[in-house]
Amino acid sequence: MDSLITAAARALALGDALSALNHIALRSDAPALALRGIAMAQLGDLDRAKTLLRRAARSFGTHEAIARARCVVAEAEIALVSRDLNWPIKSLEAAQAALSKYGDHANAAHARYLAIRRLLLLGRLDAAERLLTGFDPTPLLPASRAGHELVIAGIAMRRLHIKAARAALEQAASAAHLAHIPSLNAEVGDAANMLDTPAARLISRGDERMIHLDEVESLLASKAIVVDACRRAVCQSGKLIALETRPVLFALARALAEAWPGDVSRADLLARAFRAKHADESHRARLRVEIGRLRKAIGPVAGINATADGFALKPRHAREVAVLAPPTDEAHATVLALLSDGEAWSSSALALALGASARTVQRALDDLTGDNKVQAIGHGRARRWMAPPVPGFPTTLLLPAALSAG
Image 1 (cartoon, one colour):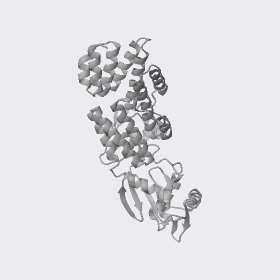
Image 2: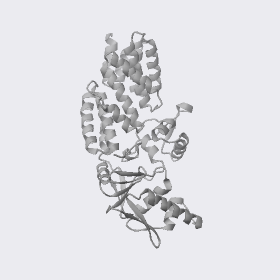
Image 3: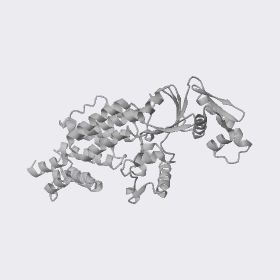
Image 4: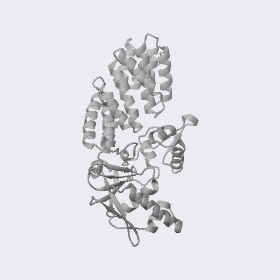
């Protein structure tokens, strides 16, 4: 490596893309193309960065397998940042294998870290944890080590293991300090702030208040019956009854939980579950059927008693019933939760992360765009959506696979 390439690489390691470009901006050899691509990525020109890295990979000779693999890893990182979650993951796995084979353990570890981050974005926590098992982060540079600890913290927050999340964030802060990259320090600080920001609304006995993640952890670990409106489930002492695919049952369960220990009138239940303004006998018959289905679904934790006016929830063993609601009643809060990271997402990436159809996500984006809550950038296949981070709007409980059972 010549002195200019070495100087540019050192500048990029410190996050100083402009100084790196001063050394190599006019060069078109393969190492310079690769470093220019990384510099453009740091400056935010991701399309130009991908083009340069692909040119560099083609320019490296067949005997330069390590250099070509490094270009693939860099392109995978750009795909992750640009939320191109359909990027061919097998290319990254092949690059990781090549780097391990030829002894570049630092970049091989970075490739595996990128694969774990992708799984975390998709909400595949179990798969991410499997990749973390046996993973030695020692070869990682401080910047990548900070990112590794952020991944561990992200999984812990979604699992609601808050003590483990705090410990990982402390490690991330130490690594970010060693990396001397201001943007990385800011990212770690933002993640740490999520633990000290109200994360959900607790509704119980007619009162409503905001609670933090550690309070959510304690609530779900208690013997209380919790109707979780963030994930549409009924929980008690680690038991989880999923109602995500049964919206009518969930609407009834939430209405009964919010009114507990009182009852809910049939008219209110019809309005909440069926949006019926003028109920007729067919609505009342359907209500009886759905109440029966709800009784069967939540039978292990609670019963439902008929009253003179309507119905009331009857816990079997719990002394408290609570509703855990998102911090906002925004209809498309889960989409906003993903967009609030400040990155530009494609509709296909959002659909993949949320496990929803492309049409459902597109309708949500159209509604949010009409309300000026998100903005579209680009056209056709290059179209992306962004929303500025909303101060004080925590998103952990709304992200894919949040609050996984167990």
